[in-house]
Length: 164
Image 1 (cartoon, rainbow, N blue to C red):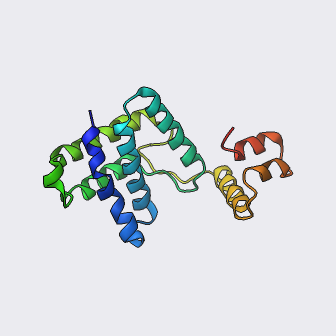
Image 2: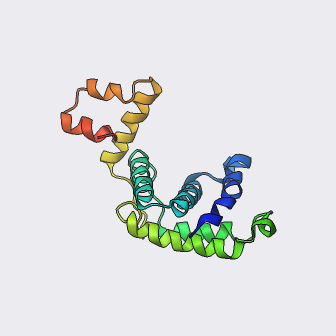
């Protein structure tokens, strides 16, 4: 259904590579979600989509950044697709692409309702501590094995280890 949107992947990815300073903070998160939406849209099977949602949930469970709201995602879609990609004539999918992404954002919002919300809220102190511990262990090349040797209760070790 959304197969032709895959042709715009290089166009979506290019701003990250050319000027990463313009894609920092909240805007970078929203733009990353567009890339995830693109993968979600081209996933042919429900298994592939469920796997992508699980991957998405794991990714955000390891991030200290509060997730962007659906309105921020929609604003990024509107902003990024105001002007067609340079090769829009070749792919001729530009008028439909913005609509596809907006439709995908709504579907994705429904399926990832635990992560995506209408209100941006800061992460909990509990979550930020988890991210800090994981980052510290990663910096000393001791992730995920170092989690087991931390002097923490098993329940907290399991919480820090996103694989469980």
